[in-house]
Length: 139
Image 1 (cartoon, rainbow, N blue to C red):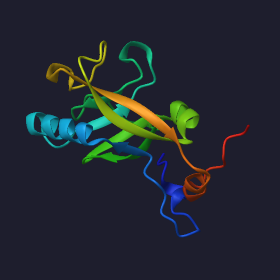
Image 2 (image 1 turned 30 degrees about the vertical axis):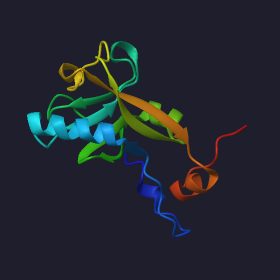
Image 3 (image 1 turned 90 degrees about the horizontal axis):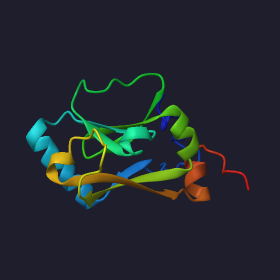
Image 4 (image 1 turned 120 degrees about the horizontal axis):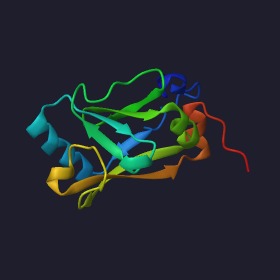
């Protein structure tokens, strides 16, 4: 499933990105690509032992399927989220940042760098939701 399909809005307004990265996150992505190759990918985990984190993986470490939604790219890395979690978060833009220190329990590539990807979010405005083709959440 691709979250952005219905989004090329009839209003002519391009939809906002569903996932963005801070300069610090993009710098860490570039470092990981220099060490591990360009073909990395992200998956926003759903919790449990990996702390609902934005995890960065090598090719083949995780397989995407019908239960995953492509949100966009950060750097040149594809970013996915599980379909159930997407349904909960579809009204928000994910903002990927970096914290100092190991994420604790994460399976992500950045752990040995003494860094951890961190996900924040913001609620889309009514205009952004319209551009994405999503109804505003109820009261």
